[in-house]
Length: 264
Image (cartoon, rainbow, N blue to C red):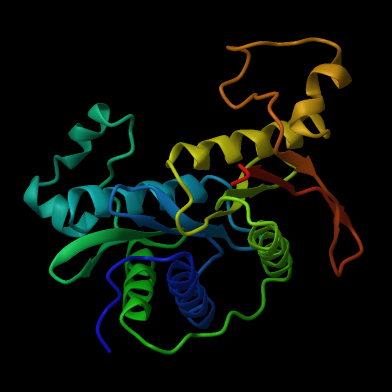
C-alpha cells in the first residue's frame, strides 16, 4: 500500500488512535496529540482524560514546527546547535526544539506534522513516531478507554453527520472543558475552508464556556457589549453552544462545542 498523498481527518484520527494506544500501553501520563497539515494548521487534536490543559497547545506547536520546518525537533536542535530556541521570537513562540514531533512525508514531500506533549522527551518522541507509523499502515488501531474523550468524540461525530446530512459546507469543530475553556478536541473536516475557521470555532467554544450561554447570547445575558479588546477569545457570533455531559462517575461537567458553519 502506498502512503496517502494528503492527511484527511480520518487518517489524522487513525494516527491519534495509534498514539493513544502506544501511550496507554506504555503507561505514559495523559497528554495531548496533534496532527497538522503542511501549513501547520490543525486537522485533528485531542487531549486525553486528565491530561494537563497546557499540553494541548504545546502538542500543536510541536506539530506546527515539524510541518513548517520540515524536520523533527531532534534534528532541528542539531541543525541549530541547540540555539533553535532563539528563532521562536519570530513566530510568536510557536517554534520549538522540545522533542515530541515528526514531519509526515509522502511522495518525498512533507504534507504535515505530528506532535505529542505530556510525557518525558523520550516518551513524547516515541509517541509521535507511533503516529507516523500508523500513517503508513493500512489497518486501523481501535480506540479504547478514555470515557470522557470517547463521549466527546461521539458528539463531534454527530455534528459532522449533521453537516453532511444538511449539505452544509465542511466545518471546524472545537470542544473545550468547563474549567478554563481549554480545548479537549479540535476536528477540521476535509475541505473545511480557510484555516481561520479553526480559531473561529475555538473562540466560540471559549465564549460559551466562559459565560455558560450560547456565544451569540452573551450580550443579552450579561447586558453589556464588551466589544473588541476585553479578551482575545471573546466573540458574540453564533456557533458556540454549552452542553452538559454526565460521566459514569455521576458528576456533571460542561464541555462546549464551537462550530464554524456555512450553508452551501
